Length: 157
Image 1 (cartoon, rainbow, N blue to C red):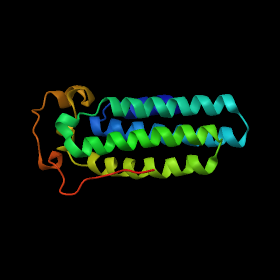
Image 2 (image 1 turned 135 degrees about the vertical axis):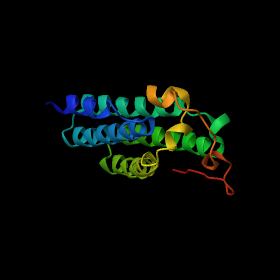
Image 3 (image 1 turned 90 degrees about the vertical axis):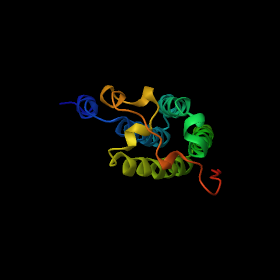
Image 4 (image 1 turned 180 degrees about the vertical axis):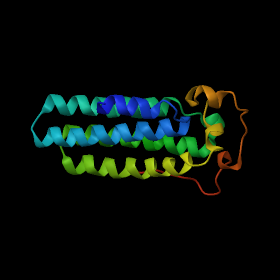
């Protein structure tokens, strides 16, 4: 079975949160591909990899719902915008070190989502369009994780 087929099969029964983790995994994989392209002086390959990272970040950002998620959603929007900028700068300067920095940031947030993915109630927090068909049938509720945090969360580059 090819790597792509394996990934497709492993995502077939995934929850919405697990799919978000998979998107982060994809972004990290393409960031490593960008580093490889820098090492090989492959400008075209680097641009393709960076475009895929940007596409993933834009997809994730477009699905944020600040009206539902409040400050955490706003913080994620700032995070995605920062990663977008850092990725473009890393590509512009063909900097392996800058790509590594983006990988570190994305991996940290990915690991947090991986912890959330272990909670069966977490899927109920996602916007309807990010839930799987099975999760859409479940009633949505607003647990305390969506409430406003006490201290503002700020992302900086």
